[in-house]
Image (cartoon, rainbow, N blue to C red; front, side):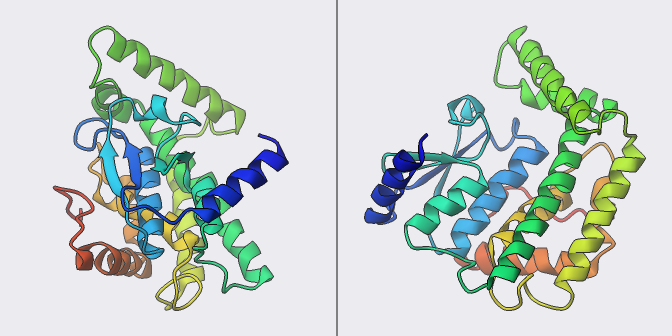
Length: 269
C-alpha cells in the first residue's frame, strides 16, 4: 500500500468511532490454537482492554487463512481488517487511543527495544518449542494444528507449517540450537524484563503501555499452558516480580471486568 493510500485509510479510521461489534479472530481455543498464537492473541486482547475498547473474541478453525497477513490474531473493525499487535496499535492510535503518548522520545525508543527483545526471544522460543522440539511436535503440535481438518489434510498442513518454521529458524541462526540453549535465551530475556520492571507496577511506572500488553500475553500464556515439560514456565517462575506483574494485569483488566482469559485456565505452579 502506498503512503498516500495508508494516510487515506488512517484518516477514514480516525473519523469512525470504535464500534461495539468489533471482533478479534483467532484459532479454536480448546483444541487447535498453539502457544505462540495464543500469546499473540492475548497480547492484543490485553492492549484493547487497557485502551478500554470492547472486543468480541471469535474462534475460527481457518483464522490463520482468513488473516490478511497469514498471522493471528486479526481484528475486524467497521470495514477495516488489521492483523498483529504492531499494526493494531497504529490503527487504534489513528482512532485517538494510545497508551504511550505520555512517554518521551527516549522512553518510546526504549519501549520499542524491549518489544523487539520479546519478539526476538520469547516468540522465537515458542515457535522453536512448537515446531523444532521433537517431543512437543509429536505429542502436541501436529495433533492440535491439524485437528480441525480430515486425514490426510491434517498431516499435510502440519508438515507444511513445520517446514516453514524450521526454514525460518535456520535463517535466523536458531536451526542448530539445542533446547537448553533456547531455554537459556528465555531466561536471559526474563532477567532483562525483570530488571527493567523492578518494583514498578508496569514497565513505565504507573500506567501500562503496549509493552506491558505484549509481555503479559507471552508470559501469562507460558505460565498457563501445559506442555510436555515445565522447563519453559520454570524460567518465568524464577522472577517473582514478573509473576506479580501477570497477576496484576489479569486481575485488573480481565477478572475485575468479568472476562475470563481461559475457560479452564489455571496457574501451573
